[in-house]
Every structure is written in structure tokens, then in C-alpha cells.
Amino acid sequence: MKIRIDKMLSGVGLGSRKEIKQDARKGNVKVNGIVEKDSSRIVDTDTDEVKYKNETVKYVQHIYLMMNKPAGVVSATEDNYDRTVVDLLKEEDKFYAPFPVGRLDKDTEGLLLLTNDGQLTHNLLSPKKHVDKLYYAEVEEEVTEEDVKAFQEGILLTNENYKTLPAKLEIIEAGYPSKCLVTIKEGKFHQVKRMFNAVNNEVIYLKRISMGPIKLDDKLELGEYRHLTVEELELLAD
Image (cartoon, rainbow, N blue to C red):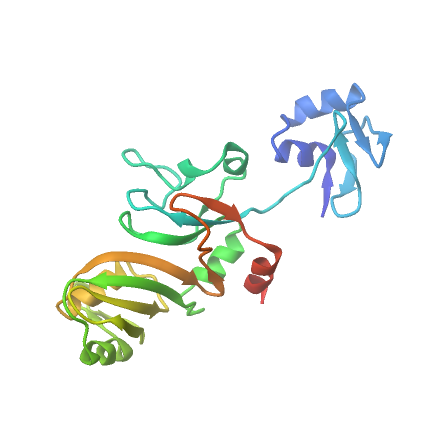
């Protein structure tokens, strides 16, 4: 990526453009080993080595994070009452102003992606894309084959007179409670819970396992997060 030095350095939190300009004049900026006093110079972040106060600077335009969201935390960038998923991030990651890709209910756990890449967010959330979202659910009453068929045909959400797209319901363990997997292609408000309510059942635990090609890293404890790997980013780019 080609970018001005002052924009690059200020963009990774090393100071304002005015401060970067002053530091460059003092000889604190080097490009490919040579002092560069003109902070307006264009550099190529892919091929040029930029050092600021003798530290190599790596420019990052977008940030991509995977979080194992805990219950009790809201999927928002800020909230007047509750702790948000952004509050769980390190300061160096907050700097890039990532936001949640869609929402998980406050009491729902599991996979949540955060990024500042608006195009990726659109690709994952657009109703036209029909991106699969897989959930593990525990529900109060026994799940039946009739429920499986009903989900497959689409569930009518009566309070807004909307019929969901066909969903996949897999019974892992029948009983009280029942344990199952649910795959949906939409992101309606409280959709999984409302679908079970429509068949006279109640979700007592819900966890998102995957979203599109990205699966929750089972090494992440609740509240932990990590950057997406190169392989995961390639999956999202396909």
C-alpha cells in the first residue's frame, strides 16, 4: 500500500501528523536505512522499511479478531450500562477501532469476529450472501423429529410475521434438556431463541460455533481473543 509517512505513522498511534512532521525534521524517521526529513513522502508499506526512532514500523490498515465471547458482555463498541466486547481488547487492538461483525445476545457465548473492515462485515452479514452460522443449543423440552422438519421448512416468527429461511436442526442428545446443533443463514434478532419458542421450547444455553468458514478456536477461553491467521483470512477471501 502506498501512503504518506505522516499518515502511516499517525495511523498506528505514534503521534499526530504535526508531531510526526516535527520528529521527521529532527531525523527520527528513516526509510530503507536513510534519514527522511520530509514526512509527506510516499512510501510503499509492502516494500519499504520505515523506522521511527530506530524501531521498525509495520503498518496495519485492517484488524481481524476472533473472540470467544462470554455471557454478560454486549456485542457493541460502547454501552452506558454493560461491559462490551471492545472493553475486553488490549489497548493496541482498540486503537484500530474494531467493531463486532453482527451481534451475539448478551447471554450467548461463542464465536464473535471483530474488525474494522467494512467490506468483510458486509459480505458476512448481507442477507443475500446466506452465510451459515452454526450454534450449539441446550433447550428445556425434548427436541423431536417434527421440530427438525419444522426448522427445515422455515419457522414463522409470529411477532413480526416473518418466515425464516430453511434451517438445519440436528439432535445431539434428546431429553430434558435436549442438546442440539442449529445452522441458520440469517441474523434476525434473537433468531435461534425465537425459532425454538415458535415450537414451544425454550433455549437455556446458546453458543455460536462457527460463522461462514471460520470456526471458534477451542483453545480460547471465555473472554479471550486472538488475531485471525493467514489461512483463516484466505478462507474469508474466497
